[in-house]
Image (cartoon, rainbow, N blue to C red; front, side, top):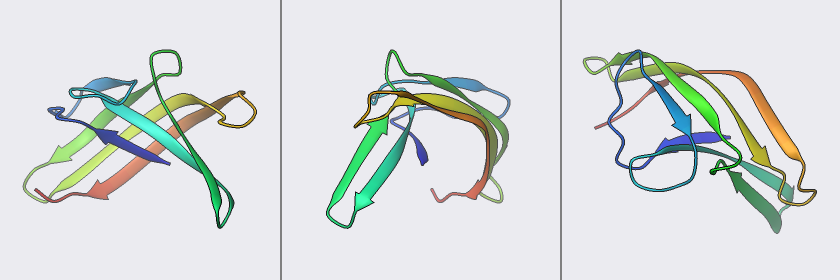
Length: 94
């Protein structure tokens, strides 16, 4: 599972809608590994969305923390996959 952005300005205390991959958006995805040679990716989009809230954004120590939830479509079955109560703490580089 991963959360990314394309040219998105991040600020502490802000909530971002997770939607499709394009400039100015935050988005999320899941990789499904079926076998060493078979895998699929699913991403949030206009129908399968979610939210990301930045709870800490420390530019001095390069730490970002937050919470998230999102839905994606299973790439094989088409079912809605619900990811809930997600949380992260990560270091980043500029």
